[in-house]
Image (tube, rainbow, N blue to C red):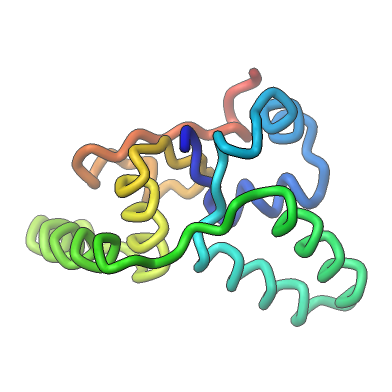
Length: 136
């Protein structure tokens, strides 16, 4: 696993954002993963949209093309360590953001995100790229 996609990047892929699509086109299926919580957020977004069927179909196509990464015991343990650390330092994050970041860390992957709270450098060891800000 080389890259783990955060929700905002997955949404950009669903909406065929050129910078994200061009990056994904150069990767094999084994190089990119989608955390289970990102899938949950995408499914909610589709269900809550005006074009539910169309958006659900987009999510299903992405789900079929990218491995879904489970929340494992190792991710849970890492989450507990990182959450305690960022809170102790006054840099708290949302639970979903932390679990997504911990999923990337457990897979030794780069987290691809446009989320400022995950790009702020406060999670030790987390490598981040923003495919919406940096052209390929």
